[in-house]
Length: 214
Image (cartoon, rainbow, N blue to C red; front, side, top):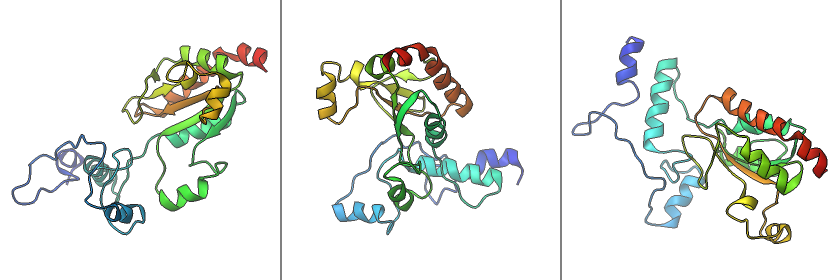
């Protein structure tokens, strides 16, 4: 079968009476009759879906199509979070980073056990210079949109201390488990080079603030 035909047909073979085209599943979560049923998914004892950010029928269909086009036997859609996390970890202007896919994370071994094919695209990191530097960093981003949600197809980012938690002092933030310099990045489907370039230029733009903030 030629690649042109695979683009149309690969990844999905409808059974008798099923839709000719694979439906787009828009649900973010999936219902189960008992906790035990969902528990079997986490224990990798059963197949199924529980959170679209990790997997859903539409994602599986897309992954199967890509595998067919590339000559593979299986595939899995993952985000660019790992590449973003790795980039940020090397930046001198980043104070800290929390991402389970990195060996430096205290959750790394657990992530390898329960998510062997890759973790999610949400990364937490701190900007050197504290609350003010992090807020300024947000102003210089061009691709990443300032939004409260995660798991969008587009990269979105949030600095809680200057938005959702802005009424709290630094001490009150820490009491909630939120560092004043913390930025939450949800990596989208844009080209990874463009995402990294956006983060890089925003970090470089506020270098003087980090120096003043110590």
